[in-house]
Length: 413
Length: 123
Image (cartoon, rainbow over all chains, first blue to last red; front, side, top):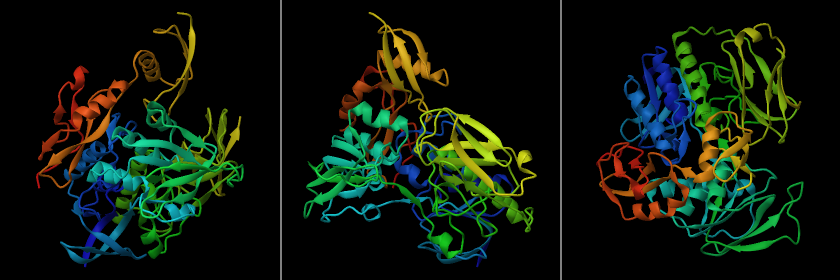
């Protein structure tokens, strides 16, 4: 049985940041577990730029951002196990893992940071009827094929869903010589960031169709076409609007879900809204000593936000490992009020400033005020859009006397 | 040229400010909607010649993976993207390559180099 102070599961931006911070905060034995053969997680295939603008004041690509963190990690004494798949996690912080190099492992950790990231929603998650030919991929899989394995998966491409990865891949596939016929989004507003609509679609004259979806798949061996329909206000396809579009490839960019099989095994409480662990502002889950950060908690818009949660998780996981966080800690719930679809974290534990990440339920294209009550903090924004997370900080001092649930609302001004 | 209105979404950072610019074809007369001065520079450049950083991959031999990610080390005219892509297509690097190694110097006389964005060891 191996014993460590802090074990971090996953080496994407969240895990790397958490491991570095745990070491900086004084944890002696930090172990980073990664199932792939290289560190960096999904950053390796995100070859576009726009990473680290806030954190490093640099416009990095994903691989550069990863390499910067990996170099920083190499200066620490953090031990890394690559090709190591964690298969089980218990609530008393025992990790079971498999690796060709180390065999079957049992690791006891004083504290654990979960940083497994998220998964893509698939065709079955959105229930598209029709045949099951080759040529239907999730956008992230195609991103890996093109950017790491060097394959172009098709020539005539339709993209369903306007999530950021789909938008990024629309540009990428166009540059590589494929024709992207259009991006079809079931909602009446885009899923991805506005800058990606501009620089990935508009820059390349790729049309975006809102309130449209794929209602049928055509083709036997290989995809031959998709039927597109308009949808009404209840997202139901409108009869008579069907249009057959010939294509050989369909990309799905229809959302991401935090990957929490291990969290469930450890009996960690999950939030029905975020599908990730319910955590406090120090990223601690409902199981003491197990922390979670990055997209395993909730799907963030920006890597800078992910790193911010990784830093907090690493610092407090180290503190927990020293025993400097008391076992008997109070917390209050943070609940979604008016026009809030989801928020993170969902609990406040009186240890640090509260940095709230909020996703609006409905778009408001006019000035809004974000209310956090108690303590009654109000923050103004010029708009609130579901595709752009709002971030609000409430200082620890303002929250010291709070004893009842904290409600977060977005109201028109 | 008479004053004209133009709408931009600034792509410098994720905020994505929506800017309304009044211009005379080359100079900005007034603008609103931008939250920082970076958008001013962006809009000024966008009027004359839209510039972007190009990110893509080139082939590589002797390494774990068959392609390596690259980018231009400064923004290049957007309209040159197809030509730069054509120029990069036949390239085959040999591992090892270090991050920021120059792959193409002064690509299409833009003054920008195409550089590797990761380290790729020899395998």
